[in-house]
Image (tube, rainbow, N blue to C red; front, side):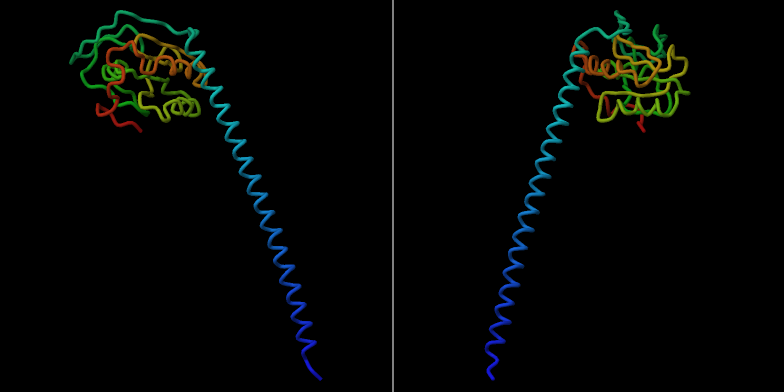
Length: 212
């Protein structure tokens, strides 16, 4: 008896199985493409949402910085002279005045820095965040976060402050009780690289000090 009918039957079944496998593969491809497309759409939507939120945050910060900041004191008449001696500053910490010819490298410090060097950094447009040496670690971390990505920010402990945290720029100062006070961000935005300073934008590196 010829085996051709059996071979034909097996070939037909094989063809049917292969056809079903191809259809299943196409369904999987469509499913994967749909899922991938959905993920891309979600990522695009999330990215757009994040960017929109960041744009709103920056816009709000700019608006706040354009206005007066509650609690900020202004000091005028600072000298720009370079000296080699210790200076008796009227503010604690100082907001400007005579200073050393070498500036303090901007960054985060775990120990106090010399006033005369830090004041020169202020002349270059830096903002200096000082804190009580006994300030809790989470509060210190909040101040360090303000320096992230910034090349003109100084953060250091300071003995004898009038408040737990003090923000200083050339001619301006803000005293706060909490390192998470939102005014610190506004102060930074308003006075960082103050264009009114003749040396704003001069280096805040290649000076003295090794930030942490």
